[in-house]
Length: 114
Image (cartoon, rainbow, N blue to C red; front, side, top):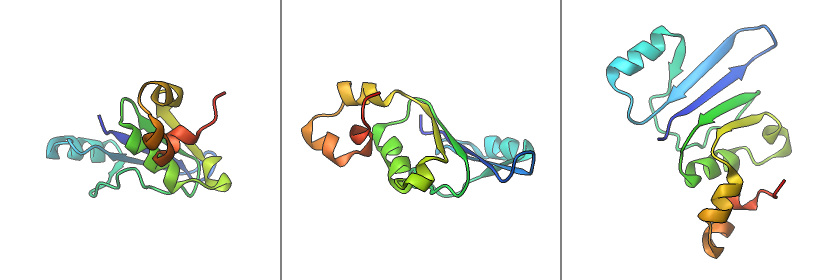
C-alpha cells in the first residue's frame, strides 16, 4: 500500500528518471524494476522527498501520513506547482478520517475544499 513512484522530467523531450519505492518489493522485483529503467530507492524516505522538477507521485491507497509527508516536504509555492499526486481524494480523508487534533497535525487536512 505504500508504493511511491515519482517521475522527474528534466526537460521536455529530454532524459527522464523514474524512481520507485515500495517497502514490500522483493529482490526479484527490484531487479526487474532496474531492468525496466527505474531507479530503486534503497531507503524508505517516508514520503519526505522534495521535488526539484515536475514530479508525479503515484500513491494509490496510501495512508494519510504518507500524503502529509509528501506535502510537508514540498510546502512551498514553487515546489507545490511541480508536485502531482495520483492517489486517494484528500476530501475523503478530511471527511472520514480527520478529527480535530489529527486535522491540525496533518497537512492533508489543511487543503481547502474545491
